[in-house]
Length: 170
Image 1 (cartoon, helix red, strand yellow):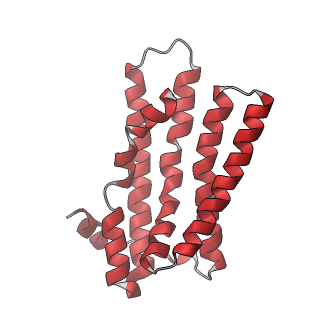
Image 2 (cartoon, rainbow, N blue to C red; image 1 turned 60 degrees about the vertical axis):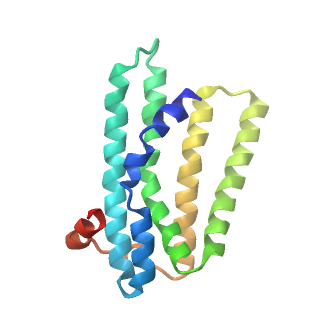
């Protein structure tokens, strides 16, 4: 749909290009895992907010016949912020625990597939489809957090390091 395509134009901004750097640092410096995750999370959160802001500003150039299209674009753009938790997937890949990622992703995909079937069966419109697309990201993040905690890790152990953040960008 137009909404997904339009929002997708700003997706690269949300990651700030740090995923590969975070993965590399998690492999090379496992003793700094909580600092790398905390710093990466904060950077991705800033990137998500920036992408949301830029998407919203770009809406000013769209001639929409109703308020619904801009509202749905903003709704779907909030997934940029929620995707910050996908840094957990980088951690599990870097520590060769891909099975944990698969469990989280399959769980989220199955749940969203069920919701899409219900959507089709009940004949719902574009508003509900956009909400389900956004829920896909929410569910993925939720399951990443869930499996991260289940494996004995704590989000509150993450720490931000401004020096490390600058190194990620240089």
